[in-house]
Image (cartoon, rainbow, N blue to C red; front, side, top):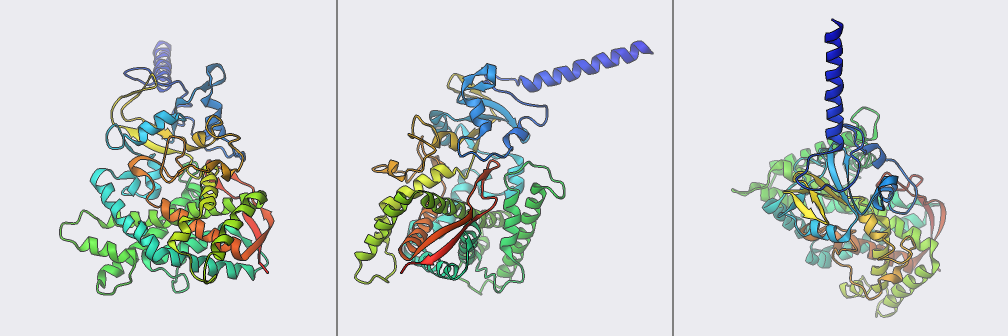
Length: 479
């Protein structure tokens, strides 16, 4: 009896030891990058999501990216295990560039299962090939250059003027909340003709719950941020589904929004668009159009508050635009927008330091040999923008807000050293819309108002960017 129990115990220990060894030493037809797979099942997920307040490269990355294995440092390319899957993390510009430009060949967009659960199985980030190009073309009908120039530019200016005027009559405004609401109301109207004043449900509140758990440890238990995130998505999707059903029931009633375009596509005889894909697309567009831009705008104003010389230079540029007009109260023209050189530098510098997207994921479709290592087929590669944007070899004093560093530089697209909006064929289709929103808002702000910082403005990353105490300012009209 004892011998059977002993043999069983030994066998169990051997099996567990073999499993732990296999976990720590994954099979590979070549040489894996150095690194640690962390604890069985958990990997290094807890360390990855640990909050931090520094503005530098995330500690999880910086502690591993220098070449010193004795201190758990592995170099610019290393392996780990996050939220249920093996991952190669790259802080190497050459490898990042290669990964982005091999989309559909050696790599394809692929995010952790928790991400697809949050954004939907048919979200645009999870679709490939023809379907991705088809959706991209749909989105460009709304946010493409012609629409920006002819329709959205005057609407963005009216939106900024209206909200700034309202805020100036209040003792203070929390800037992140204020800009988020402002942008959401505009984009929700353009997308689905949503008017919060006429709706029985507050659509944006569901997105607030969603955002709070978007980049959080994925434990779906009531009370956790991740659970609240999923509940927020569920409620928002229910509202969108009801709206779509109403539109399809009364197709003759036109609203002049993106939903009309979607309904038309769904009616086509041989359409590739499904209701599930359409709803996931709407959800992603509503989220992406306001959350990232409001974070970037809040941070830009925080930087300008702390750097008066940059604010002075920005103000001079926009006052020069006013002085060059026959009528100072006329609307911003496309030519004036394109002349906002220093404004563009401020925006580039803000998004470089913001690093709103802490990681961009791709999946290897085959074994890839690169930098002396093998990336196994099926493994994820996480490109790390903060490590690129804060590299002192590329950007002098990388943690310093310095818009002048962009003088004479073009950064309209992605590059090896600038990937705030992604890169390759999946370069963000909303980039021009985001930059236009920021430029127009800054123009309206600095030409008519001044402001005083009251409280908040501190930043925390989890690893996404957040203002835990907001950024409260008092807005005052200029004499």
